[in-house]
Image 1 (cartoon, rainbow, N blue to C red):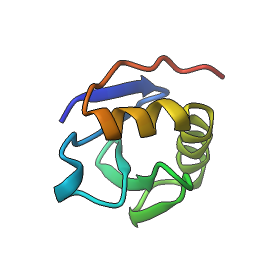
Image 2 (cartoon, rainbow, N blue to C red):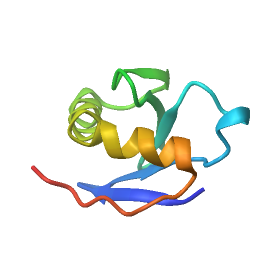
Image 3 (spheres, helix red, strand yellow):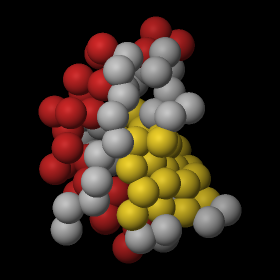
Length: 84
């Protein structure tokens, strides 16, 4: 699973096999906590992460939603830097 971004102790990864892993989403890892976030809505639909990290991840997804959807659809990933 490629790493898409790293910021503030959070690692964002994406499986690039969309047919097997719908809805389009990213995996966010913070310490021992993991959350799955829908890249269309920015909402966590599985997992348990602290509220502050959830907000940062949702903001990251909102800022980069077009690039994330494109990666999901093309199966070509790129590293996205954190832009606060």
